[in-house]
Length: 470
Ligand code: UTP
Image (cartoon, rainbow, N blue to C red):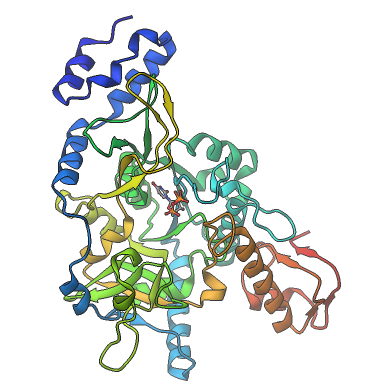
């Protein structure tokens, strides 16, 4: 079969004819797949991204801007003062009301490639329970089920997948009956992919003779993907006004945290972000700052070690507020972000991408050979009229699984889950033997107060145990 004329002339006009170089060697099925891939590419967008790349002088933040940075302007910090406890209690009450009125939904971004972890399945299928091997997906869904039961209203879950994670994610959750969420409350939406481009030319990489090398368009791709799948209408129809946004890798995130929701609503915030204090100025974590009145995130790679230690006029660190990637969006703000003039910028990453050379031989590069283009959801921050920043307790709320080993790994995340469970048991007047590990299903207890109501004070755990409903 010949390649269609439309496709040939399209590729010619964008100087990408090499994508059909091996056409004659492909089976009919491979030809169809390649055609489908080519048809799905927005070549105008690619041409403008390549042009941007060629003209860009690097994305570094100018030194002047960094010097003008201040600790976030609209901020709720943790404190032991009675005023602070009172404010948190009021916020929590407001959060409960929003949940009871059914105005809250949750968005999970689970389209990433998880390359640092090196796990073959989607990251959500990774076993994280310290005793039971409960997966990340199960921990998240059980939290939402428990929270919606507590407040008497379902919480719709909008789960973003990508080309690579879509099918296995849908299949896994379906097979497990959505862990009790109810099929009518789970909405999958697949984000778009973008081709990788050769780093020293404008040519799109072929991964194989009949397949273009593509990768997901970043978590910022969520906005277009929500719209494309008609989910903003679903949110409107269901009366959802606030969206708790989180990533798949942090099992200790407090999903739909009523305190965060309450502060968000009380401050009339468009976009609220949970931060935690960085352990040290050189920790590799994006930081929330306010520059010239706008809240934004500075990536750690944009700060020199000296800049990272910058102090304000009171001698306090400027760059302390580490981004947990937990946000609450006002639905109307998401709608505003979808208007053209608010669209998010693309970032360019220099990556190693397995591909074929011009003779069709496979290449597994040992240094970066490609540019990938991604949008980041946190670029929405400066576009918010009110962007609130709320500090959380790091050991309780931020324990992500990013790397296979070392910091932010399955080991550190499981340890955190274990320590949280131990502290809840001890607060309830119980004891856990030093050698024993306790795991708490969110369906058994969502927080320490609930656990205290469920176990007798004086309960002792001598051996590993999973606390789950019978
Ligand atoms: P990360 O930045 O940790 O990227 O994503 P990643 O792809 O999961 O992992 P590495 O960098 O390859 O090791 C943070 C969150 O954003 C989601 C991820 O699934 C994760 O929940 N994400 C990332 C998407 O949903 N889509 C993307 O295109 C990128």
